[in-house]
Length: 288
Length: 288
Image (cartoon, rainbow over all chains, first blue to last red; front, side, top):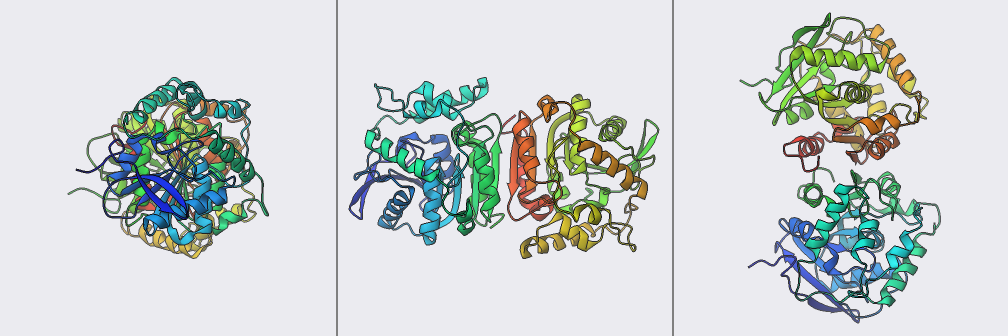
């Protein structure tokens, strides 16, 4: 029996002194696709419609980075250190070259991983994210709502999540609620919520990432991997123009923006997103 | 035997006093896809890899608008008048509701058609184009090269075309030459080149379209059709930021930008473009 998003058991691997929680499902062979999630998120914050859709044609690996949710260790305060932890995890699992899908802060880490450990990364999918020193949000509610915590779960509550990740339109809000139901389908063997330490350290790392370092956007020229950049056309957390910038500066980047959607466009259009990802990732790629 | 791009005979239909040249091929049933080409171009300026690829799953209709190439009449000096001519042609053929793919000035006409005759247009594909009053090119060579004419053909020559429509990179230039060979595969029953009158009138229409009218970009809010916006990530003729603007302002717009490519990204990545178009146009659409 093949495992799926909801049935894959949580496993652990020790690497460089950290005990990493991970799950693997989908095809046994092919280039694995490794997913890196958003602020405060662990393995249970993905959309099964996305992960199982991608797993039809490749191995999919979810994991919690150091200190996050079910993994041991402490969450570090820089994106670069998070990328190094991710490399430790991937080397610990002996996965070889992988494709990496990074969402939000996970997209920052994916970029840093491709820059610091290029030999590990075959292709990149960057969703709802932006470059170092990108354009900041102008929405005054983002900071507060992003840190808000539902006391019954220890996580972001539904109302804050719908505001931050979806558009105010009826269609987008309905898609957000449908996603929320899908992501809670897994009932057993779930991650614990991330700790306040993780939130604080990730916040520090995000703030440091917002600072321009050297010539703005120049490090993007060093990303050689074919890259698919995806966002909603009105992201209030990491403004959509940042996705455009990524597509201008990364040499082999393709950009896709979805209508009537925000930060979580991949959860609003899971079928479309999976179809676009598979076109991009499948061998032989239509562009490379 | 089914016709293809190179074998479909040129036909004519009289509508509102104009004798329009057109060709039809591909499937007999389904929503027809009608293509509107770039500055000075007629039916022979498309890529058979694109048109035949799209025609696998729908009827494809090419035509010359009033005054252009093989059609009768004069080319008018406004985009709006060109859109009205296009509506005359479509009504003359009794095509019912169609999908429209507009490239460059053809994308301006497609927008005007959707705004002035919304009942005719089901979905829009806008390639290498921009909104009324968009951002102008900063490349000083575009005007001169766009008007240059190879005396042996009466059309834009290869060197100017490669500069204007492709990137300077080796890969993009090679793709441009491969396209040039494909587009000249049709040897018989070809269009005559467009006249100087067409070039002059189209130039006037383009200049008028560049002027902001009323609140900038506001008319885009009135385009209700699901719209796929496509460009290369570095278009020097209609700068790529204009495609981004279209995707911000048209309510149901999806944006796709291709790497290492310019104005003619659809001819650089014909298979990828056809796959993306078919995902967007096929019934049922994954978003609508």
